[in-house]
Length: 185
Ligand code: NI
Image (cartoon, rainbow, N blue to C red; front, top):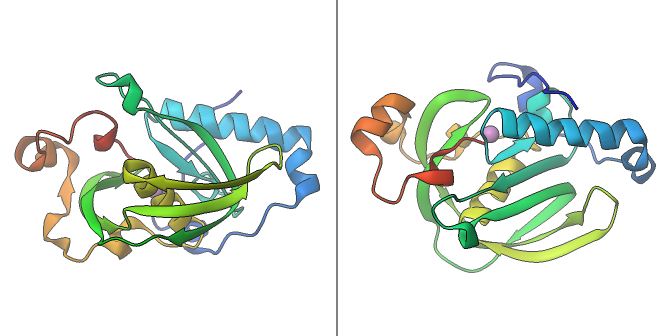
Protein backbone atom coordinates (compact mmCIF):
# COMPACT_ATOMS: atom_id res chain seq x y z
CA UNK A 1 0.00 0.00 0.00
CA UNK A 2 1.04 3.57 -0.48
CA UNK A 3 0.20 6.99 0.85
CA UNK A 4 -0.98 9.19 -2.03
CA UNK A 5 -0.31 12.93 -2.28
CA UNK A 6 -3.37 14.99 -1.28
CA UNK A 7 -4.01 17.93 -3.59
CA UNK A 8 -4.97 21.29 -2.14
CA UNK A 9 -7.40 24.04 -2.97
CA UNK A 10 -6.34 25.68 -6.20
CA UNK A 11 -5.83 22.38 -8.00
CA UNK A 12 -8.51 22.33 -10.72
CA UNK A 13 -9.41 18.71 -10.01
CA UNK A 14 -11.09 19.93 -6.81
CA UNK A 15 -13.42 22.07 -8.94
CA UNK A 16 -14.20 19.34 -11.47
CA UNK A 17 -17.31 17.17 -11.60
CA UNK A 18 -16.13 13.58 -11.14
CA UNK A 19 -17.13 10.79 -13.52
CA UNK A 20 -18.82 7.52 -12.54
CA UNK A 21 -16.51 4.54 -12.09
CA UNK A 22 -17.39 1.82 -14.62
CA UNK A 23 -18.14 -1.55 -13.03
CA UNK A 24 -15.35 -3.31 -14.95
CA UNK A 25 -12.83 -0.62 -13.93
CA UNK A 26 -13.85 -0.99 -10.30
CA UNK A 27 -13.13 -4.72 -10.42
CA UNK A 28 -9.59 -4.32 -11.78
CA UNK A 29 -6.79 -5.22 -9.35
CA UNK A 30 -5.13 -1.83 -9.92
CA UNK A 31 -8.34 -0.05 -8.87
CA UNK A 32 -8.71 -2.24 -5.79
CA UNK A 33 -5.09 -1.49 -4.88
CA UNK A 34 -5.72 2.21 -5.35
CA UNK A 35 -8.78 2.02 -3.05
CA UNK A 36 -6.52 0.48 -0.40
CA UNK A 37 -4.13 3.39 -0.98
CA UNK A 38 -7.01 5.85 -0.51
CA UNK A 39 -7.80 4.25 2.85
CA UNK A 40 -4.16 4.31 3.90
CA UNK A 41 -3.88 7.94 2.81
CA UNK A 42 -6.94 8.90 4.89
CA UNK A 43 -5.48 7.13 7.93
CA UNK A 44 -2.03 8.66 7.39
CA UNK A 45 -3.58 12.14 7.28
CA UNK A 46 -5.63 11.38 10.40
CA UNK A 47 -8.77 12.30 8.47
CA UNK A 48 -12.31 10.98 8.73
CA UNK A 49 -12.97 10.98 4.99
CA UNK A 50 -11.26 11.27 1.62
CA UNK A 51 -12.71 11.71 -1.85
CA UNK A 52 -10.97 10.60 -5.06
CA UNK A 53 -10.54 14.16 -6.42
CA UNK A 54 -8.45 14.92 -3.32
CA UNK A 55 -5.81 12.54 -4.64
CA UNK A 56 -6.15 13.94 -8.13
CA UNK A 57 -8.59 11.40 -9.57
CA UNK A 58 -11.92 12.72 -10.89
CA UNK A 59 -13.88 9.59 -10.04
CA UNK A 60 -17.09 9.30 -8.05
CA UNK A 61 -15.60 7.46 -5.10
CA UNK A 62 -14.94 8.31 -1.48
CA UNK A 63 -13.92 6.57 1.71
CA UNK A 64 -14.66 7.46 5.30
CA UNK A 65 -14.13 6.16 8.81
CA UNK A 66 -14.35 7.80 12.22
CA UNK A 67 -13.00 5.92 15.19
CA UNK A 68 -14.06 7.37 18.52
CA UNK A 69 -11.59 6.45 21.25
CA UNK A 70 -13.80 7.94 23.97
CA UNK A 71 -16.91 6.13 22.85
CA UNK A 72 -16.15 3.15 20.58
CA UNK A 73 -19.86 2.49 20.05
CA UNK A 74 -20.18 5.95 18.48
CA UNK A 75 -17.48 5.21 15.91
CA UNK A 76 -18.30 5.09 12.21
CA UNK A 77 -16.93 1.97 10.50
CA UNK A 78 -14.88 2.10 7.32
CA UNK A 79 -16.97 2.64 4.20
CA UNK A 80 -16.03 2.77 0.52
CA UNK A 81 -18.75 4.47 -1.51
CA UNK A 82 -18.74 4.38 -5.32
CA UNK A 83 -21.03 6.27 -7.72
CA UNK A 84 -23.18 7.68 -4.93
CA UNK A 85 -26.51 9.46 -5.01
CA UNK A 86 -27.83 11.24 -1.95
CA UNK A 87 -31.33 12.30 -1.08
CA UNK A 88 -31.73 14.59 1.94
CA UNK A 89 -34.40 13.55 4.42
CA UNK A 90 -36.62 15.93 6.33
CA UNK A 91 -35.10 18.04 9.07
CA UNK A 92 -33.66 21.47 9.68
CA UNK A 93 -30.02 22.04 8.71
CA UNK A 94 -27.52 21.43 11.51
CA UNK A 95 -24.43 23.64 11.89
CA UNK A 96 -21.18 22.03 13.00
CA UNK A 97 -17.44 22.43 12.47
CA UNK A 98 -15.74 21.00 9.41
CA UNK A 99 -12.24 20.88 8.09
CA UNK A 100 -10.88 19.61 4.79
CA UNK A 101 -7.62 17.80 4.07
CA UNK A 102 -7.38 19.87 0.87
CA UNK A 103 -7.70 23.13 2.84
CA UNK A 104 -5.29 22.35 5.66
CA UNK A 105 -5.62 23.74 9.16
CA UNK A 106 -8.88 25.64 8.74
CA UNK A 107 -12.18 25.01 10.47
CA UNK A 108 -15.57 26.56 9.82
CA UNK A 109 -19.22 26.11 10.69
CA UNK A 110 -21.13 24.39 7.90
CA UNK A 111 -24.87 23.65 7.70
CA UNK A 112 -25.74 20.10 6.64
CA UNK A 113 -28.86 18.01 6.37
CA UNK A 114 -29.26 15.92 9.54
CA UNK A 115 -30.10 12.72 7.66
CA UNK A 116 -30.05 11.41 4.13
CA UNK A 117 -30.59 8.37 2.01
CA UNK A 118 -27.31 7.16 0.50
CA UNK A 119 -27.31 4.96 -2.57
CA UNK A 120 -24.43 3.66 -4.66
CA UNK A 121 -22.20 0.59 -4.71
CA UNK A 122 -19.37 -0.60 -2.50
CA UNK A 123 -15.84 -1.46 -3.70
CA UNK A 124 -17.08 -4.83 -4.93
CA UNK A 125 -19.97 -3.36 -6.87
CA UNK A 126 -22.57 -4.47 -4.35
CA UNK A 127 -25.51 -2.10 -3.98
CA UNK A 128 -25.68 0.27 -1.04
CA UNK A 129 -28.99 1.79 -0.01
CA UNK A 130 -29.17 3.08 3.51
CA UNK A 131 -30.08 6.00 5.69
CA UNK A 132 -27.21 7.82 7.41
CA UNK A 133 -27.56 10.55 9.99
CA UNK A 134 -25.67 12.81 12.35
CA UNK A 135 -21.89 13.00 11.95
CA UNK A 136 -21.91 10.26 9.30
CA UNK A 137 -24.44 12.24 7.25
CA UNK A 138 -22.16 15.28 7.58
CA UNK A 139 -19.13 13.35 6.32
CA UNK A 140 -21.11 11.90 3.41
CA UNK A 141 -22.31 15.35 2.35
CA UNK A 142 -18.77 16.77 2.58
CA UNK A 143 -17.34 13.92 0.47
CA UNK A 144 -20.24 13.97 -1.98
CA UNK A 145 -19.62 17.68 -2.50
CA UNK A 146 -16.00 16.86 -3.45
CA UNK A 147 -17.36 14.76 -6.34
CA UNK A 148 -19.13 17.85 -7.64
CA UNK A 149 -16.28 20.32 -7.26
CA UNK A 150 -17.76 21.86 -4.12
CA UNK A 151 -15.68 22.68 -1.02
CA UNK A 152 -16.92 23.27 2.52
CA UNK A 153 -16.08 26.96 2.22
CA UNK A 154 -18.78 27.20 -0.48
CA UNK A 155 -21.32 25.83 2.01
CA UNK A 156 -20.56 28.23 4.85
CA UNK A 157 -23.27 30.81 5.41
CA UNK A 158 -21.04 33.16 7.37
CA UNK A 159 -17.26 33.29 7.01
CA UNK A 160 -17.01 34.85 10.47
CA UNK A 161 -16.56 31.38 11.96
CA UNK A 162 -13.67 30.51 9.62
CA UNK A 163 -10.64 29.88 11.81
CA UNK A 164 -7.12 28.53 11.75
CA UNK A 165 -6.93 25.24 13.61
CA UNK A 166 -4.73 26.42 16.46
CA UNK A 167 -6.89 29.50 17.09
CA UNK A 168 -9.99 27.33 16.84
CA UNK A 169 -8.58 24.98 19.46
CA UNK A 170 -7.87 27.89 21.76
CA UNK A 171 -10.97 30.01 21.29
CA UNK A 172 -13.79 28.30 19.47
CA UNK A 173 -13.77 24.59 20.17
CA UNK A 174 -16.62 23.52 22.38
CA UNK A 175 -16.84 20.71 24.90
CA UNK A 176 -18.27 18.35 22.30
CA UNK A 177 -15.79 19.20 19.57
CA UNK A 178 -13.03 16.77 20.52
CA UNK A 179 -12.35 13.41 18.95
CA UNK A 180 -13.33 12.63 15.37
CA UNK A 181 -15.49 15.74 15.10
CA UNK A 182 -12.34 17.89 15.18
CA UNK A 183 -10.76 16.04 12.25
CA UNK A 184 -10.61 17.00 8.60
CA UNK A 185 -11.95 15.09 5.61
NI1 NI B 1 -12.64 17.71 2.18
